[in-house]
Length: 357
Image (cartoon, rainbow, N blue to C red; front, side):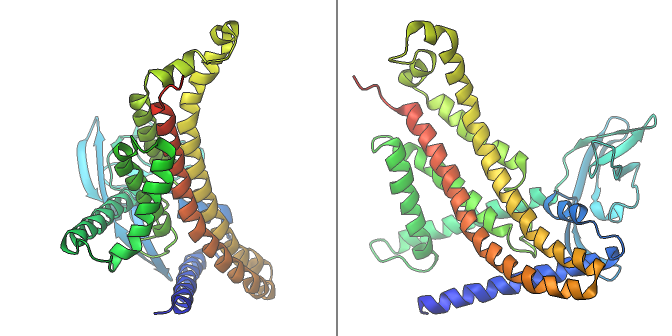
């Protein structure tokens, strides 16, 4: 197949996915035509949930119920499916999903104790948790398959998935790990850098697919980016050599009085600021991309509520902009995975750099 045909096929698939997304979005709006709240609907799509919503047909919701696992001091362990909540409208065994706008537990499972909403220990398999498990299984299958192919076709040209992944693997190894860490030590960190790149990249792409198993906002969840950044922080800290820590507490070429007064504080703060930047950068960029895409969809219903003609008119602008932003999001999916991996590699390189006399 020629490159031109591949491009047109990819564009056609993207437009079809946007069409599916638009259809789902429109179906969900049918229940809320009189009081359309764009902010509420957008947050419902980007937030985590106890069910994996597929579509709404009239008053019928099609969703995948997920396991709820909670531990209460009064009721002990309870395991049941989230469908028992009937989309958050009913309580089950004394547990319910808080819908109070004033409650800090809005959208979370709570129980009523002494007239107050109290959160039990929540170990439920939520939408993001299931998405995480599915993506890890997929990535493991992908690379185990590629590894087996390398063994079977040793010395031969790459083929199939192997040929698609090899350029990315070599790019991370040569242009990220080796150039940032150095030829002597890069091999030690390459497995982690490859893992983090493909984990972020694949989950970014899955987040752009509006139907199961896509649609979860995994890399736009700050808990996920926090853990990823924390792993990078731990590796950097553990790998730090004497030269790295000496530069933090006693910067070379800096007056002694400046070193003992403020510079070591600034440098030590930088140790924690670096992973914080990693966490926020990935979270904010992916979340913002989803919100902007959903915002363009919302314009159709906002204008449609004012005037039917205006709704159709804004549709002609909204859909092309959505196609453009979706194409841009494909690029962002790669860039954010690359930036996270590159910054991690740079941190490792600084931590392991030897002293040059």
